[in-house]
Image (cartoon, rainbow, N blue to C red; front, side):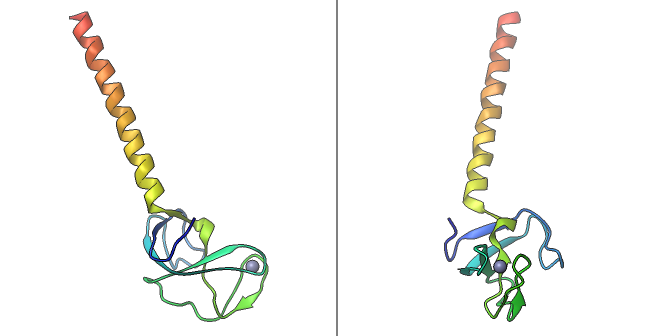
Length: 102
Ligand SMILES: [Zn+2]
């Protein structure tokens, strides 16, 4: 799901505001915590050093940010172009209706 070099966008604010919703990051590392949660490291934020998992309190030198705070940009672009095409379809339908009533 997440690949090194992939771009992701934050979908919520970090508890200590290290990132904000809408910020874009490039994945440079990922690992799974003891508790099973996926953590990501980003080029823009650097390596976090020693940090504690918010979920299981396991202290690790890998650190990282919870993957579920982010969404891959690719999927968001896809859904945006999808809704664009929906709007276009609606507009076309409206145009047809106008023609009929005239
Ligand atoms: Zn954990």
